[in-house]
Image (cartoon, rainbow, N blue to C red; front, side, top):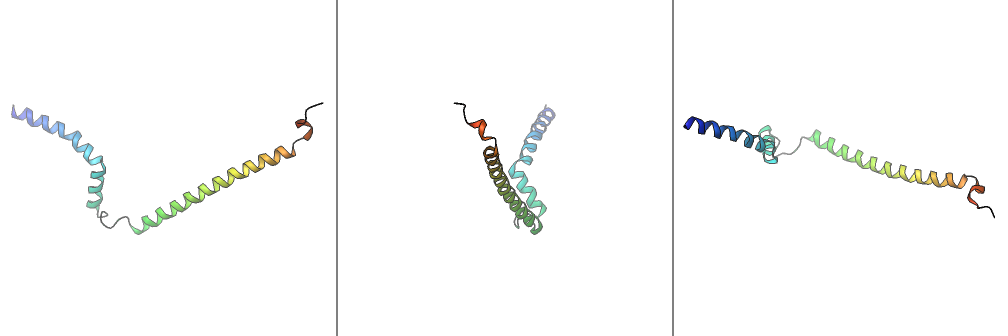
Length: 90
């Protein structure tokens, strides 16, 4: 009977352990065990993160600029269209 209880407890602890390991708490413990908990990310990683953020900002600016240019191009195309199309016949 005791053997069955121990097997049942072990079987129930496996999913609980998996959930804890995959949680933010488990990740924090893993980072501390790797040695990166108190000092933060490595300098190379910080530089890479900064560069990625800069590139993302520049891409957003370029997308906004491109959208504005598309609007301007459509406006110019409408201006250059045949003016007789726009006027209704009297």
